[in-house]
Length: 382
Image 1 (cartoon, rainbow, N blue to C red):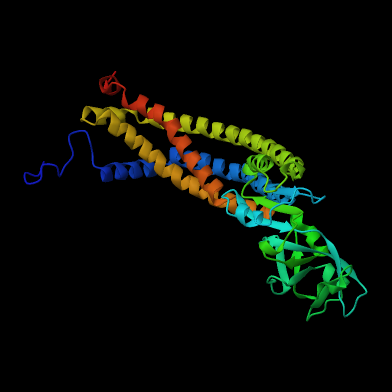
Image 2 (tube, rainbow, N blue to C red; image 1 turned 135 degrees about the vertical axis):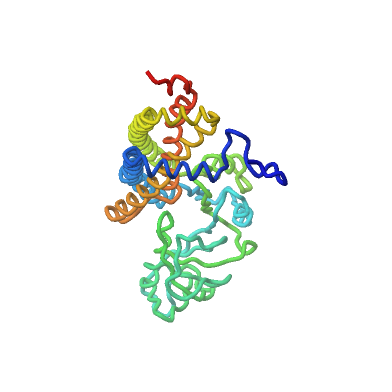
């Protein structure tokens, strides 16, 4: 009966409250043990199978891409080996402000240096402008200020630079003065060659000649556009003499590997989900047919078709959400135990969400069919 004070306190005929739908769905899921267990097994096994197969492939793909990227797929090099183009020393600071650039490092011409205290060894030294990138790790001392230097991991012992470090001076120009070496670095990836060199920090206005400019793009997808932009408008007085190079071979390898692995993984996932959809359809159809008289009684008592459809979908959703969470958790634990790594949380949540949505989509036509049948024909006694 409707409350006379609040006529909206109870729903219209045929439209039950949300809590009543949830309660009815929970009761239905717990009472229909066979169909609920079948749905749980189908959805949980699907999530588990996808994570163990496709998820492991995704984790391997991420590892492979990271390894290929470590070879410098995002690194663009502007070179002026002959010194004819006159690359601007301010280019490092200008380009580093671009949104598609992570860091920029520029080098001047190389000159051999030696340790004046122990002049038995030599190493190439270059002035540099810009910022020290993440691929370069400081393993001793500190980063240099303008007028100071850092030595590469292999160059330091060649120059007999001990724990307290020391000074270097140019071999060809002994009057150039001594430059204090304040740290030792270790470079990896495309800048690994810096381990054999000495880098001398300098302000842009103190550098008259930049021979090489290394530019790290923010993402591999912007490398082509960034390369074209630098080729069309190089930061140099004579742009025609500047060579703009990008690791096209590594980028092609990256695209080929990700495309091949991704295609095979998607095909396998589609097959697994297709099988799950068929199992869900068969299970829900069997349950709906066995409870068709229950649907007929509800329709005869005034339940709307939409409320019956929503009730069936809610019941399936409660079962599949729990099953997807269970299968995803077991799959992640299994993949981590097998490989030592696991798919990303986005991929895992995407698998669970897609499986749940697919199960509901498979249920919808059957729920509509069950809700639209004539209750008089269902309840007719032969």
